[in-house]
Amino acid sequence: MERRESTNAKTGFGGPNPRDVGLPVSKRAGVKTGWRPSHLNITASPRDAPGMASGALQNSSQMACDSEIPGFLDTLLQDFPAPLSPESPLPWKVPGIVLSQEEVEAELAELAMGFLGSRNAPPPFAAAMTHKAISQLLQTDLSEFKKLPEQEEEEEEEEKALVTLLDAKGLARSFFNCLWEVCSQWQKQVPLTTQAPQRQWLVSIHAIRNTRRKMEDRHVSLPTFNHLFGLSDSVDRAYFAVFDGHGGVDAARYASVHVHANASHQPELLTDPAAALREAFQRTDEMFLRKAKRERLQSGTTGVCALITGATLHVAWLGDSQVILVQQGQVVELMEPHKPERQDEKERIEALGGFVSLMDCWRVNGTLAVSRAIGDVFQKPYVSGEADSASRELTGSEDYLLLACDGFFDVVPHQEVSGLVHSHLIRQKGIGLHVAEELVAVARDRGSHDNITVMVVFLKDPRELLEGGAQGTGGAQADVGSQDLPTGISELETSTSTRS
Image (cartoon, rainbow, N blue to C red; front, side, top):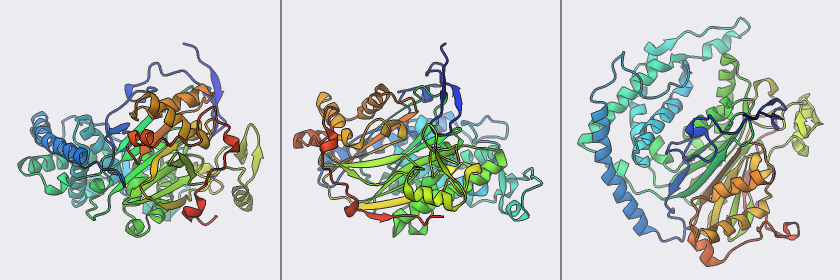
């Protein structure tokens, strides 16, 4: 096999970059995987967007979901007729040796959603079942799982006292038995709350390792946000995110598990979702830094997320992963990525005693090509963990959101996205399932060597985009530099974190 050395654009470190041969199926370029909160690829149903009549589809989808539940429960209990004994093998891979108390809920939710999704559980039901099982576990005494960490001599006494570590394998076994108990109870009577109607979404996702040695991107598509976190108000919520790791996958994987969980616990979620997202990024960064010190991890990750609450869009970001909105064929800028060469970022870093220098690109302290990220323990506080956010009311005229890492946006300008998507929909006669795959291919063909992740969240039935004839300014052949596009900034309610 041919092996080539290349430099990681984020860290500046070199490494061999074989192609996808030999990777597990779930990590190969272009391979679609099953539903799970951080690895969903396609939810193939148009959502009930403002102005879009999809009642018949929603009802038929709900009926199909309800009819699947009894069979799913019967099969699960046939395969697992009793709770796990101490000697029984676990049905899932345990996330490490220990978990801190603050990590338990999100990590176990990830395990359950992956397990239930692999067995084709209807997503809303899987999320509700996961929430119920976690709630039961957290009501028990977890002290039996407590482990004493190996403390470093230089650690401060205050920091030692804050960390409670629990045996991950024991927790995972006890949690599965809680899940089994919920399954057994619900086989007799499924709660009505698990069968509540839910908006249907069309989400196209594609991710490739490309020529990099490792795949360090992670993404989240969670239309069942309310079910997973037990939110019973009348506001529909759906969460989408892309995380672009560097120096290893640990930080990106961690963020894909914990940011949305941390957001769900913020008091501001119900009144100021954008603030909840900012706090969730900060909280996740603090948690990962503690884990990084315990386990000697050095990775970091940029990230961008979108939380749609009812008819309002909230976005938050760290670093250079980005989200754009396309409305009636026009690109609406929602954010400004954090890059070292941005004047305010450069001034913030220099005020802290760091520096920004131009090497192959602009880098913080001669190393990282991003100025904000979760993790990067040895570059704090110069590389900040404080996110920025913005909010925007949705009117029903919006076409779709596109979230992607810099492996895409470094080679595909925002203004070309609309034309590329429109051309794809024309060729596919309004079917948008594979539009992300084509966008990834465009970025790769234009010379991107980085990991590439693209997520397209349709806010309108793609067929309506063709009927409306809104092509925007995007085509790859268009003179995009001459277009006077609305930025949308004036229509945004923006929130910028305090510069540290």
